[in-house]
Each structure stands twice: as structure tokens, then as C-alpha cells.
Image 1 (spheres, one colour):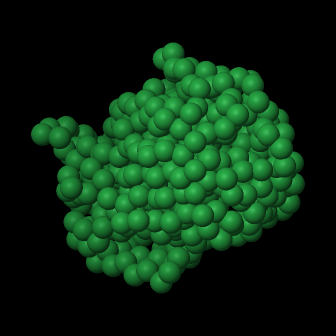
Image 2 (tube, one colour; image 1 turned 30 degrees about the horizontal axis):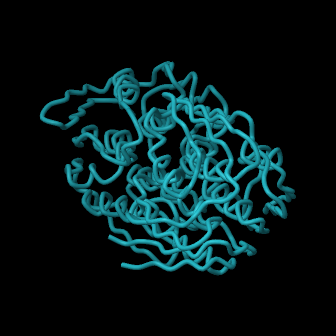
Length: 417
């Protein structure tokens, strides 16, 4: 397994364009199976999760060609409705193929998904919603089997605004008979990106970004070209890296309207934030202030995916910060590793109390999931001495060549295989 070696204490000072959003590109790639045609996806990041998604597409019979950050997906010769266990276990978001395959083939067979172990992420909402569309679902021997003579529009209320469930309904319903409405839909910007992609295909979907989404089924979809939105979580991580090192960073392509909760918190902690139409600039030239209380919430609240890197920030801020994790109960796997670096953190269930230390010190630490790994990178950049982070496979799931971007911005960071 790979590892990152960071010599801390160097100021992050750089400018670069943001990668495409992991949480947008995966459902959009799943959606390419719907039209039975050729699709071109721009700004597609080089991530291990994208590579796993390409494996799924190829297993289904699709042809995929990559030219740097451009993916060409041709689903015209798709000849399978099954995703084997070895592929489903690689990542949680593989479940998003369920809605797309059933819409294309009127049958689907997938195993239960895998992914980072950050807490319970049941797919009950997905299956309940698909059943409401007239899809017959049986579960046996670790597999989910779906059959539908036809998919019929329905009014669906989600008990929780699940991003994955919202996306699966959109994929399954866009060629259904009749109209589907999703109440209490997820409002994340990535939902809007999927809506835009599907509408380019010829779907009729409205309401994305709001709590009610309306899908009017159509008979046919066509191949399209689409550019993936910038990754707001990656943006927040690089902003945190600059803030932790009293540095400055310019992120081109950033959409500040997607990042209000992140930018407001950084401002409260003492950073100077400059918001422009297609970029954000952060400057931090002094020790950060504690953030009082940080509660993770569904969008537009503070994202659970950025909680970990911000805990690394709080670990060196002046004062005490209380984190309350409301989304995933096992999202504090990075805490023990930060404590090894000198952080003062105490856990009580879903609450973490972080008392800012004067400094962190380099140590040998282990990434146990994607965002926790990013937190260790932020901590290592700010720490005295050398930090070695094992299990870079988790970081690579969501960050495109993180060491290259940071090295170009003044960090001394190398990857060792």
C-alpha cells in the first residue's frame, strides 16, 4: 500500500483549478447507461472511485475511453444487467447503478455495496422508493434482484433527504410512465448537476436543488456532452490546508454558492475570504480562532464530508471547538490518529470536544477512510517534523493526485509506494 510523507511547517501558497466533483461524476457515469448512445464527460477527475465505476460500466458491456480528464462512454452495446460482488464491494456509490440499469433493462441484479466504513448507510430508502415505482425487488444471498414489466411514476416521500436515494429515483423514473415527485429530496449541488445531465439527454426533470423534484417520464434519451461541476469538498480541504499553514490559496473554477457553510466557518475562524464569480481566495496570516460549535447537516448545512479536515484545523486553533456529527455515527476514525500527533480531542458519542494545541508534531499515522485521510494531510502540513500517512488508497478515492497539487503550492510532500 502507498503512503504520503509530509515535512510539515511549510506555508501553502498556490493557485490551481479545482478537479471535478467525485460526488457528481459517479451518478452521472451511471446515467450514461440510460440512453444507449455515446456520451462525453469533461472534467472527470482521476480517482480510484472513477476507475471502479469504469470497471462497472465495462462489465455491463459499455465501451469507455479516457483522454486525460475526458471520458467517452458508449453504452449502445450494453449486454448485461448484473454487477458482480467484487465490483460492488469496492465503493458504496455503486448502488446508484441500480436505478439506471432497471430503467434501461427492466431488470437488474447487484450485490450489496461496500465502501468506507463510516457508519450505517442502509439502502432501505432506495429500495422502498424503487418499489413505489412498480419495481419488484427480492433480496437473497447478498444480492438484490429487480424486475419490472414497466416503471410507473409515483409520489415518493423520503424519510431522510438521502443523496443516493434521490439520485436512484431520478435515474429510474426519467423514462417511467407518468410523473414522479420526490418530496424531502436531497438538495446538494450534485443533484442539480445530475438533473442538468439528464435534461441534456432529453429528460424532463425540475426542482433539483430544492426539496421537491418533479420527473416527467419520457420515451427516449440521447447521448450528450457534459462538464462535471467543481468539487466543493476538495475545495474545502485545500482551503483548510492553507489556513492551517497560515498561507494563501486561489482556487479557480470554485463555485462559492455551493460552499457558503464552509467559507462562513473559515471566516469565523479568522481567515480572509474573497469570493469571486468562478474562484475563491483564502488568506490566513495568524493563528486560527476556535469555531465554538460545528454541526454536520444535510445541504445547505455544514457537510459531513469536510468535518474531518476542519477538526484538524480546530486542533491547532485558539480555544475549544465542539463537533456534533449528525450524519454518520462512525465518522471519528481520524481522532486517534490526530491524538498521536498531539491533538487534544475527547469523544462522547456523536460529540467531539477539541481543545486547540499550540502545535502538532509529525507522527506515523494511518488513514482509515477517505475524509479522515484528508484530515491527516491537513494536520501533517501544519505539524512540526515529518508525518507519514499509510493507506493512501482511501485518499485516492476522492482526491486527484493530492501530493502534486500541494507540492506545487509549497508543501514538501511525496508519495512512496
